[in-house]
Image 1 (cartoon, rainbow, N blue to C red):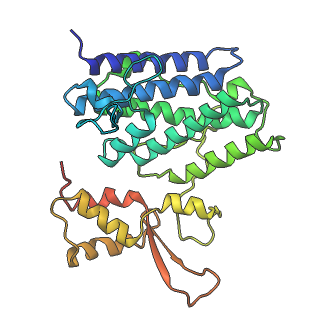
Image 2: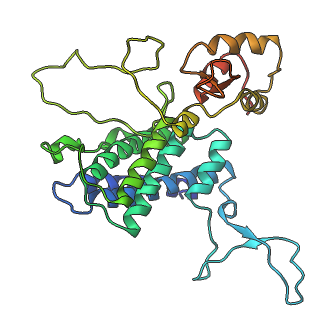
Image 3: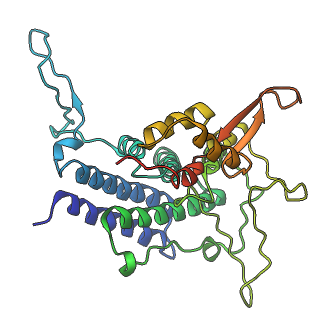
Length: 325
């Protein structure tokens, strides 16, 4: 007999396969919207399966609990499951489970941000509609990362063999080879969605295992091209300039020195805020993959400086300290 965890994993895979199958149909008018709905369903089932695995396969661990009151107004001693309109216990949703599993370091920051992007696409699609090519392009980038993160997470959590499945999305260029996303007329609602997704992309990190978005660039050539232009953080003054907004900077470098140190105390069992810690951290400050030093007032050269750290720094600190179980 299959456990509840295994049943949820299998239903999750079926949901993701359905999302991909519909997306890859040659002519499906509600392609992107349907993919977002089913992909989130697949992820929620996968998160619930992991939650059950961590809680002894107890279904009650998924219930949303609330205080109940007696007729005389006094509360019952124990909380009880919140009940849906049809009388069934209400279970925790995707947002809650993703947040809890991220705090317990079972899911990456980039995967959570990707789910936020897919969720916003889903919500916008359900309550409104989109007709521009930019929406299709952004869904392609967000969706590709969603599937890739899903496969990696499924393998890590449940040792799922995805070799028998065709887990890929059809390249956008084969759908609309002559269309460009540039110069499109967008309604206000579509602009807001596009801006929001772009703000989440700042959480992408070259060293992270998962991604918020994956850029899709398809072109026709006789052979593999060696002239692709690569981008990375660099101090080279002649390198191409890439400007990030204030919010994007905060997303990419969310940790101050104090918050980084506090997370280290929670993350490592042998961590001490001493000379060893500083000798490890200070060289990493010179690498913009890990740290960005900014002035409080960029226009004032005498203004105080503040260190902002990327979560990628933990890939280096993990080599020096023992993570808590």
